[in-house]
Image (cartoon, rainbow, N blue to C red; front, top):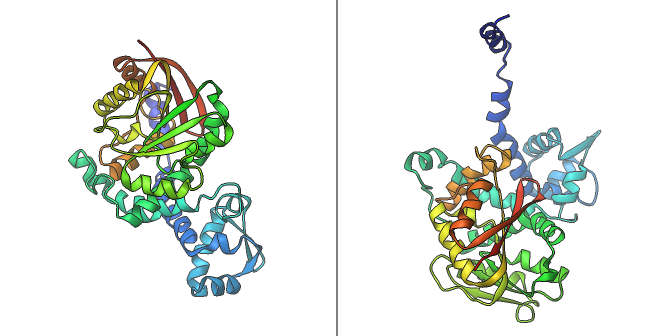
Length: 338
């Protein structure tokens, strides 16, 4: 069989299943979001319930409660034994509020903020920038955003603490560190480490609530815009976690130059993000998240490791290593040069 004939044969055996699987993705997501908003997973945290018992506790009609409960059961988030529903192992661990990590705030963030902005993806692509406004949040939305990002990045913060040896450092500057979740974990793991969180005023307000009891001892919060305002100096390590994907390349190069000024020669730079292959197609999650960074951030994108290394060379840093962290998120380590 010729190659052309083989190609025709392969095409004739193709099915549209992949298209259906992709196209129904929004249905899967929305059932998860609604189950989270209704409190289904939290309600089932203490044990199985019948549909009637579940609906009564939620204060929702049985018929429509069943639609969502059955959908998330089919998705593997609930299990059903006879007429009773219960959380699956993964839902009990991450969605019930009783497990080691609570992904509830992350689900709420995607439902109330991201999902609506994804409706603007086509217009954003046509216009060349996000049309929903660059982080244009109300005070309540800022709280949902900050708590959602913290839940999303909790695993990354733990992985960083386990992967990189901070015992060699004394002072860390966390630029755009959100609620301070990274500094909180690092300060607990490394008693000799002092940290500064540098954030915009709205995010800093959320961080102060999150870091109650730790501010003033080993963690301080400084308000400012890291692309415009002067950065504090005198640190031996700078952390950029989920920051570079918010900015265009030119802004990232400038930010890295500014970060370089915050440390002495030999200081370290740690960039935690969705670093991709040169084609920006792997890992898959990173390729998908590029749309998220566009519609939520306005100008965001994902970047390849090669692009990141190029920025380092232009801004006074030397590439040291690239390390796996958690899932599609990895760590780029650099050192300040004279």
